[in-house]
Image (cartoon, rainbow, N blue to C red; front, top):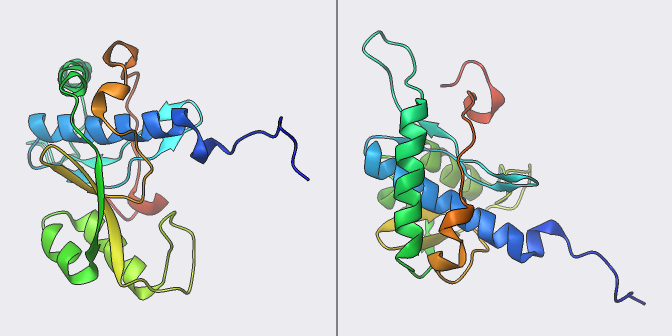
Length: 179
């Protein structure tokens, strides 16, 4: 018997969908400022959201990072994009279609291939269940490998509630030998 007071799991809440959608809009904004950026993953977390990006190298050969000015510009672009009220649309792609579509996104390609091989599930957890297709979400021209869920429209993420607080470094899949 279930209680009317049972707590809803975080990944089933409206807040989760809002934060997940904000992460996608942030990735869209980053690509407006850094078209060559490589996208990794961007989940909602308990106190907000994040997205991992590879911005390539600086002139000195070191990994490029976001400056405080970059964050301000990305945040301003996010707010503009959120107000446009684009629809989030979910669909699936075959593995072959997804590999072709994300051909210039090496981290997405690795995820797609790992899903197809049954190495990981959509949450990145080890599994032995290969898949034949992957989920994607699109709003405007931005398309991301994703199982969702998201809000229906970008305007459901209040632009004045968005604040990019910080950046941090990370290695792909936590391996210091990866970028």
